[in-house]
Image 1 (cartoon, rainbow, N blue to C red):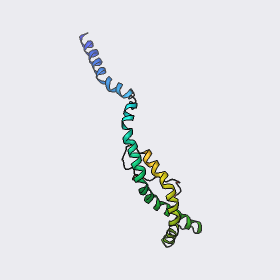
Image 2 (image 1 turned 180 degrees about the horizontal axis):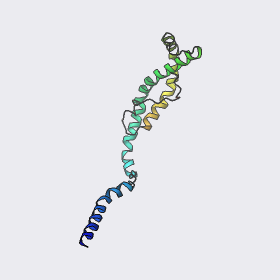
Image 3 (image 1 turned 180 degrees about the vertical axis):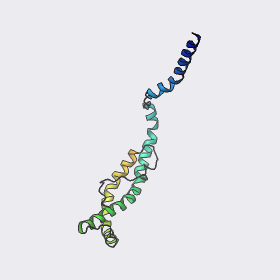
Image 4 (image 1 turned 30 degrees about the vertical axis):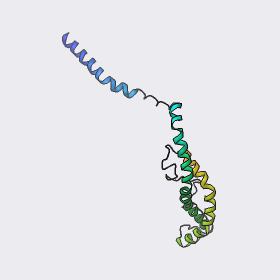
Length: 145
Protein backbone atom coordinates (compact mmCIF):
# COMPACT_ATOMS: atom_id res chain seq x y z
CA UNK A 1 0.00 0.00 0.00
CA UNK A 2 2.81 2.35 0.90
CA UNK A 3 4.59 1.54 -2.38
CA UNK A 4 1.49 2.23 -4.50
CA UNK A 5 0.94 5.51 -2.64
CA UNK A 6 4.50 6.51 -3.49
CA UNK A 7 3.98 5.59 -7.14
CA UNK A 8 0.76 7.57 -7.31
CA UNK A 9 2.32 10.63 -5.65
CA UNK A 10 5.34 10.37 -7.98
CA UNK A 11 3.01 10.16 -10.99
CA UNK A 12 1.01 13.19 -9.80
CA UNK A 13 4.20 15.18 -9.17
CA UNK A 14 5.51 14.29 -12.63
CA UNK A 15 2.19 15.25 -14.20
CA UNK A 16 2.12 18.58 -12.39
CA UNK A 17 5.73 19.31 -13.33
CA UNK A 18 5.06 18.86 -17.04
CA UNK A 19 1.62 20.48 -17.16
CA UNK A 20 2.60 24.21 -17.17
CA UNK A 21 4.75 24.03 -20.33
CA UNK A 22 2.06 21.98 -22.03
CA UNK A 23 -0.65 24.42 -21.04
CA UNK A 24 1.48 27.37 -22.13
CA UNK A 25 2.02 25.80 -25.55
CA UNK A 26 -1.68 25.22 -26.12
CA UNK A 27 -2.95 28.60 -24.92
CA UNK A 28 -3.00 31.39 -27.47
CA UNK A 29 -1.06 34.54 -26.77
CA UNK A 30 -3.19 37.59 -26.04
CA UNK A 31 -3.63 40.13 -28.79
CA UNK A 32 -1.46 43.25 -28.50
CA UNK A 33 -3.13 46.19 -26.84
CA UNK A 34 -4.25 48.83 -29.31
CA UNK A 35 -2.84 52.29 -28.99
CA UNK A 36 -5.08 54.67 -27.17
CA UNK A 37 -6.34 57.89 -28.63
CA UNK A 38 -4.17 59.89 -26.24
CA UNK A 39 -0.96 58.24 -27.42
CA UNK A 40 -1.92 58.82 -31.05
CA UNK A 41 -2.68 62.47 -30.39
CA UNK A 42 0.63 62.82 -28.55
CA UNK A 43 2.57 61.57 -31.60
CA UNK A 44 0.52 63.56 -34.16
CA UNK A 45 2.77 66.67 -34.27
CA UNK A 46 5.87 64.56 -34.96
CA UNK A 47 4.02 62.57 -37.60
CA UNK A 48 2.75 65.73 -39.30
CA UNK A 49 6.20 67.35 -39.24
CA UNK A 50 7.72 64.12 -40.59
CA UNK A 51 5.18 63.98 -43.39
CA UNK A 52 5.82 67.61 -44.41
CA UNK A 53 9.60 67.18 -44.29
CA UNK A 54 9.42 63.84 -46.10
CA UNK A 55 7.21 65.22 -48.85
CA UNK A 56 9.33 68.35 -49.38
CA UNK A 57 12.82 66.89 -49.04
CA UNK A 58 11.93 63.48 -50.44
CA UNK A 59 10.67 64.88 -53.74
CA UNK A 60 14.07 65.60 -55.33
CA UNK A 61 15.41 62.31 -53.98
CA UNK A 62 12.45 60.49 -55.44
CA UNK A 63 12.92 62.31 -58.77
CA UNK A 64 16.56 61.24 -59.09
CA UNK A 65 15.83 57.65 -58.09
CA UNK A 66 12.82 57.23 -60.41
CA UNK A 67 14.48 59.07 -63.32
CA UNK A 68 17.01 56.29 -63.89
CA UNK A 69 14.35 53.62 -63.73
CA UNK A 70 12.05 55.50 -66.09
CA UNK A 71 14.87 56.13 -68.59
CA UNK A 72 15.84 52.45 -68.60
CA UNK A 73 12.19 51.38 -68.96
CA UNK A 74 11.70 53.69 -71.93
CA UNK A 75 15.00 52.73 -73.58
CA UNK A 76 14.30 49.02 -73.25
CA UNK A 77 10.78 49.56 -74.55
CA UNK A 78 12.05 51.52 -77.55
CA UNK A 79 14.64 48.90 -78.44
CA UNK A 80 12.22 46.05 -77.75
CA UNK A 81 9.71 47.49 -80.20
CA UNK A 82 12.32 47.30 -82.99
CA UNK A 83 14.48 44.29 -82.11
CA UNK A 84 14.20 41.20 -79.96
CA UNK A 85 17.56 41.79 -78.23
CA UNK A 86 16.84 44.76 -75.96
CA UNK A 87 20.04 44.43 -73.88
CA UNK A 88 22.43 45.47 -76.66
CA UNK A 89 24.62 48.26 -75.21
CA UNK A 90 25.26 49.73 -78.68
CA UNK A 91 21.54 50.41 -78.98
CA UNK A 92 20.79 51.02 -75.30
CA UNK A 93 23.02 54.10 -74.91
CA UNK A 94 21.56 56.09 -77.85
CA UNK A 95 18.04 55.00 -76.91
CA UNK A 96 18.65 56.14 -73.33
CA UNK A 97 19.87 59.53 -74.53
CA UNK A 98 16.86 59.85 -76.81
CA UNK A 99 14.38 58.79 -74.11
CA UNK A 100 15.81 60.82 -71.21
CA UNK A 101 13.83 64.06 -71.91
CA UNK A 102 10.58 62.11 -72.11
CA UNK A 103 11.49 60.15 -68.99
CA UNK A 104 12.24 63.43 -67.18
CA UNK A 105 8.80 64.76 -68.10
CA UNK A 106 7.01 61.61 -66.93
CA UNK A 107 9.10 61.47 -63.75
CA UNK A 108 8.39 65.13 -62.97
CA UNK A 109 4.68 64.40 -63.13
CA UNK A 110 4.85 61.17 -61.09
CA UNK A 111 7.38 62.28 -58.45
CA UNK A 112 5.08 64.41 -56.25
CA UNK A 113 2.63 61.53 -55.99
CA UNK A 114 5.29 58.97 -55.05
CA UNK A 115 7.06 61.33 -52.63
CA UNK A 116 3.83 62.14 -50.79
CA UNK A 117 2.87 58.45 -50.75
CA UNK A 118 6.27 57.48 -49.30
CA UNK A 119 6.01 60.25 -46.71
CA UNK A 120 2.51 59.17 -45.68
CA UNK A 121 3.07 55.39 -45.64
CA UNK A 122 6.23 55.41 -43.47
CA UNK A 123 6.03 53.68 -40.11
CA UNK A 124 8.09 56.19 -38.13
CA UNK A 125 8.44 59.95 -38.55
CA UNK A 126 11.73 61.09 -40.10
CA UNK A 127 12.70 57.58 -41.20
CA UNK A 128 14.55 56.79 -44.41
CA UNK A 129 11.36 55.45 -46.02
CA UNK A 130 9.70 58.80 -45.40
CA UNK A 131 12.41 60.59 -47.41
CA UNK A 132 12.09 58.11 -50.33
CA UNK A 133 15.39 56.42 -49.42
CA UNK A 134 13.92 52.96 -48.86
CA UNK A 135 13.38 50.30 -51.49
CA UNK A 136 11.68 51.57 -54.61
CA UNK A 137 8.42 50.01 -55.59
CA UNK A 138 7.92 49.32 -59.25
CA UNK A 139 4.82 51.37 -60.09
CA UNK A 140 3.93 49.43 -63.21
CA UNK A 141 5.71 46.09 -62.63
CA UNK A 142 6.59 45.96 -66.32
CA UNK A 143 10.37 45.98 -66.38
CA UNK A 144 11.35 44.19 -69.57
CA UNK A 145 14.84 43.25 -68.45
